[in-house]
Image (tube, protein in one colour):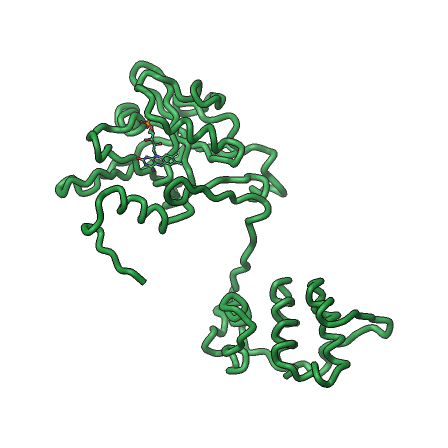
Length: 310
Ligand SMILES: Cc1cc2nc3c(=O)[nH]c(=O)nc-3n(C[C@H](O)[C@H](O)[C@H](O)COP(=O)(O)O)c2cc1C
C-alpha cells in the first residue's frame, strides 16, 4: 500500500487519484438557463443525494484550476437559482461526453449533443427527454471550498421540487434498476454501466446478525468460503443447530457426478451424490463448496445445514 499526502501531488494527478478511488459516481446531466434565455447542458459527477426529507442533492462545479474561469452551470445557477438534473443512461453516454466540451456561453449544448428538451413544470430549465429519471431543482446554498488556500471547488446544495420518472422503468410501483441502464463515472476516461447484467440485490438482515466472529472455527477459517459467504452466514439471528432430517430426497431423485452437479449450480443434487459416497460425505471442501452454491442462490438455511453436517 502506498500512502500519499494531497499536497505532494500536482493538481492533475491528485484530481485523477481522487476520481479513480471515489468511484463509480452517478452522473448528473445538469440543465440551466442563462440571463439571455439560452439553455446549457453539462455532466457533473461530483454529484449525489444527501437528504430525502426534504430531497436535497448536490453538485460540485469546479472553478478552472488552469484559467480561473467559472463553469456556465455554476454561473447560471448562482444567477437564476434553478436547474434540472437528468439521469444518464448508457444510450446517452456519448452525447453527455460531447456536452462536456467547453462550448462558448451562448451555445446551447442540447443542440450540439443531439439530446431533446422536455419542458419542466416548476423551474425554467428544460430536462432531457431521453432520460428515464429527472429532477427539477432550486438552489438552496452554495458552499465555496477553501478559497483561503486557493481551493477551486464548490458544493451547490439543490432542493428537488419535482421528480419525473418514465413509465418504462417502473415495475409494481418501483423503479427497476435493470430497466434504467445507468452509467457512472470512474477515473480518467473510464465509465461503468449498471445494466441488467451488473446489478444485484443484497438482502439486509432485519435483525442484528450473529457476526463473523460468532461463526464456528471450521466455517470461519474455511479455505473455500469467501468473505461475502461468511458475512451472509453471519447474518442469521442465532447460531443454527443441525436438523437431523436434512437433507431429504424423494425416492425418484436422481443426480449425475458431483463435479457436473456443482458446475450446473445444482447444490441439492451435489449433496445427494455426496451423501451416498462415504469418501465425499465427510470431505470438508466438498461440503463447503456445496454450501457456497446454496448461498449464491440465497438459500442460507440449506447452506448452514450443509456446513453443520460435518
Ligand atoms: C462524465 C463527466 C462528469 C463531469 N463531472 C464534473 C464535475 O463534477 N465537476 C466539474 O467541475 N466538471 C465536471 N465535468 C466537466 C464539465 O462537464 C465540463 O467542464 C463542462 O464543459 C462544463 O460545462 P458548463 O461550463 O457548460 O457548465 C465532467 C465531465 C464529464 C464528461
